[in-house]
Image: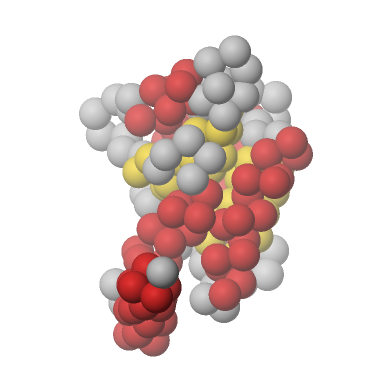
Length: 156
């Protein structure tokens, strides 16, 4: 695996329209990342190998998107001490409420940062904020982004 800072895992290819929003943010900030489809339940060995490979490639943050039972972020968290951000995906009869609860209700000692349902843009920005703790150029880019957001609101 090429050098990356963030690994994005999604439980199904159908999650791609949500994940593309995160990828757009990461591209805007020039963050090296990789996106893979992995399932906590259907491909557990491949999921574990993706975590191992990503850490060997320098990964610092994992973003995991899954719907319904949404165990992907928790499984990844159990295999790394790097930060894990969960994105609950709207799907099934509960439209993401079940995924939100599955992602946010981790047992003590296994924290997963969780953003809102389908909130992949916020997941990407949170991952960038984590990386910015040791990167002043990223800090400056984040501050510029916040200023641009404020200016856009004031211009309305």
